[in-house]
Amino acid sequence: MYPGLVHAHSGLRWIALILLLAAVVVAFQRWQGRSGYTDGNRKLYLFTLISVHIQLVLGLILYFVSPKVQFDGALLSDKVYRFYTVEHITGMLVAIALITVGYSRSKRATDPTTKQRFVAIWYGLGLLLILALIPWPFRIPGAGWF
Ligand code: HEM
Image (cartoon, rainbow, N blue to C red):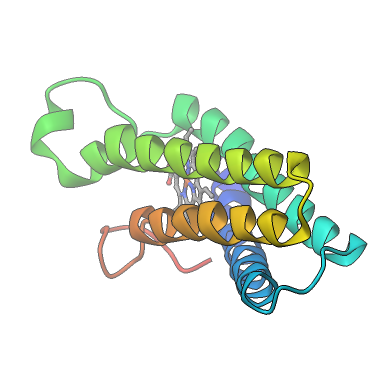
């Protein structure tokens, strides 16, 4: 089960990243162009939210089964253990919280431009944090591209 979970979590990063990028670009353009909020936008923003929440669920399960999460002395001395045990989870939880706040504030807003602005800013911040905390193979030994 463990290898399958790692592959699912690793591969889904691309879907989440593509959706996030599309959501931020669309929201930014519509915010700046002052164009309206449509059903199509809402679906894109919702699917993006769902994709990062699926990552959250897979990540939480992995946190309990992964050999890369360690709470002994190795945590402080080993860069890989420290990354997965502390940095990756903390950063991703904050990023997913930002995206969730953006979605709900956008949903509650009444003005169409404000709806787009909330998504552009909160999803944009979430995307930057996620990009910074993905275990890219050139940064974290043993990480893969898919
Ligand atoms: C959008 C959010 C997230 C993205 C894009 C993401 C992405 C990734 C990627 C690309 C890997 C590397 C897999 C590999 O080695 O090929 C990984 C590993 C891991 N992630 Fe996440 N992650 C996210 C959120 C989370 C969260 C919220 C948690 C914990 C609650 C988490 C826990 C883990 C763990 C424990 C591993 C190590 C798995 C292993 O190789 O044993 N992730 N993540």
